[in-house]
Length: 286
Image (cartoon, rainbow, N blue to C red; front, side, top):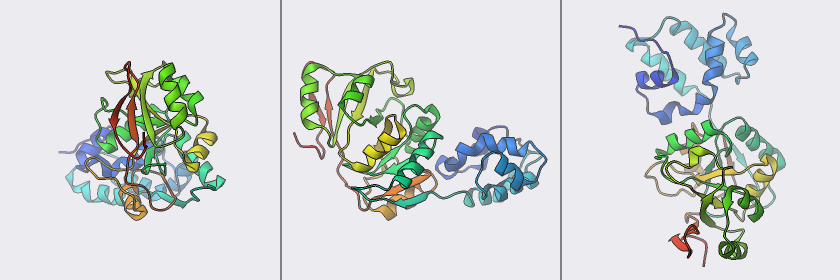
């Protein structure tokens, strides 16, 4: 009995592949559906809808095999589609004087809802545009996180933090002394924080990294960037660029490789109560 591939969710369940195997090209799914709905040359339609040239071969496979739905005999072809998908771009970037062309390439990915791996002043981070709900959903899914778990984001300075969180006077004095640096501050959120980050809570985690690549990305994008450690669920921190590249080659679109990364996370301080509480002692010294 044949089963129609009606949605990306049904498709992923039918194929039986873990989300991590097919997640990297979800960003193009809507465009791919648009391509498949037109009887034109695959190369022409992929270009029309802004898909990379490699997608022409993927489109051809779909047009030949799935016009009338799919059954179990098509799983091998679907597996082939997965394997020929795009691989993340790895850009070697200078840690102190980041190349502007690499920064612009990464911000273009962020602006279009993609994920990037980038260096911070603690561990490598996995990030997306704070204003893009779909991109944030991708991070939750690929890391296996419950939405009740806090996702932090980075800002360029203390002034911008005040746009997204309420900063008490007592907290301001401490933060001004510590920033920029490897610290995450838990604060009460303002209305500017996307609701997807506030599942059953009213607090956010915010960082101002002492890292030239982070600051360049923030300056070019003009908005905060989600910052969660570049590792999958239950994995230890990774500092080896080769290991990071292998892990995220089908998840992120760009990896800004500045060399070996740290293995110690940021220090987390909670400023939502009357007295500050050190939730996690990390790289940042107090």
